[in-house]
Length: 504
Image (cartoon, rainbow, N blue to C red; front, side, top):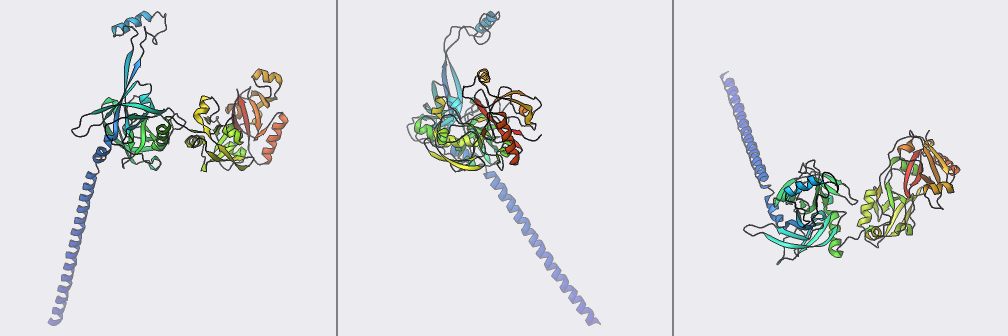
């Protein structure tokens, strides 16, 4: 019995020893895990501390410049521009001006303006905004001084400007090579990427601000707009300065802000570098821009227009008019929908305008259009837009789409075109079509902007001269299973397409 008790006690001591060993092992593992967490936390903290923007700012700042312009303004006699000449308040305002130091001696004075820019080559080419240097008599470029170095200021001359993208190219002559920065690919910038803005805000001198890309492909008011929106602080004086990515590449030129008070509220706009690069290359080579010109008037394709023309989905650019120019010579027609330009799909009018503008003048490009229910390829030799503008010819400018609502085409009262109506409407003697004499204000046609005096020249992309022609086009569209009829309407010589519902 005692032997049996001794065996049990020995076994119990063995189990206790094994549990003690396991307990020690678990404590060792926990200590090791805790130590690893501590090391990881220290590593993260050290890494976060090393992610200062200072090294990047120090590297690229020597290429960022302040720009000061001086413009001679002719003086004016009296309170011109304030009250009309001969006004009973004229003497009051003249006295007010005299008290404030304006003696009305018509003496010219100088006006100064501030902006920013950046060097893009060691031989002194500098990019800025056109509005920074517009009409300036003298342009001074001030370089950011290095440690212990004096401020350097050089006179710049204008190489070329482009009002459409608000870009200007300057040149300075320096005694040696200048520090410069390179352009990056703005198309790869993503919403949420970190960016740095540099410049001369409010005349305070060199300044750095940081933020993120808030949005892409913003359009403000220009034909070729492609702005990067950022919340990096941009103020007056930052215009023309660079927007950098974290690789120190310029992906935008700071151009505008949205603000109710003139100060930064975190909505700034930088022209995308992929637009700027093409403009700068042309200014550097020619001293001016040379944009491609197709020679069409276009408008976006709406859903009902797409349905009326038998397109699978809205898209492309609908040609509303083809004046004399490359497109007309190549055989493009009003009613064609441009689906592809030079091998690139056309999403909308804005996209086409940019594609054409960036194409080489004189280049022969393939234009794929939707016509008569199918697609055709037309070879067009591009002209030069600047020449066309000087000659005041047609331009590929988008037109605003009309307001779209569902209504009945019977809301239109139409009449065949007569010589009397031609004279009343100021139309050419060879003008053909149907005149709208009245529009029901409750109809879809009225909502889409059609008015008495408008001339319908096409329906279903075919000419119409009689009411019977129009009725036939309506019936053909119904038989084809279409719910809308596409009309080409002219007013004062300006054409546009309108799709009207065929459903009563």
